[in-house]
Amino acid sequence: MRIISKKHLKEFYENPLYFDSKNSLESWHKEVLKTNWKNPNEIKEQYKSASIVGNNRVVFNIHGNKYRLIIAINYPAQIVFIRFVGTHKQYDDIDAKEV
Image (cartoon, rainbow, N blue to C red; front, side, top):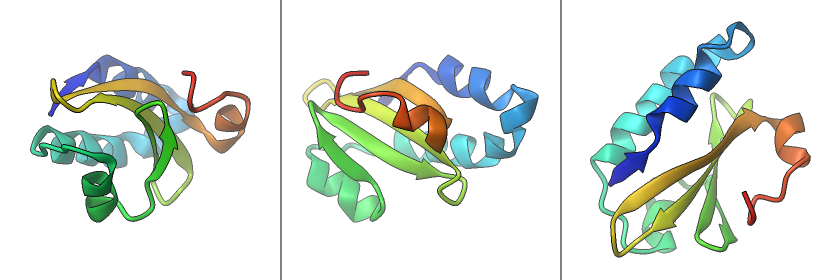
């Protein structure tokens, strides 16, 4: 998969408040670069705790469920778009299907 854009991940974990997320986000990024998901079921096979929320959006629990990561996926083009990275409180203030 191609990921657009790692910049969002880096901006998040470079914040001193969220520095503990760096290893988890970097690991997720490396794993996803090696995948070729064709549908949401393949994501669930790899990430059991991922939530498929509709509108081609998937929510991942990051760093022991301390943070949330939302992606949008274009399966035919094999592109993952980082749509949101944040805490649970920040996640509660957004609509995961619309970000």
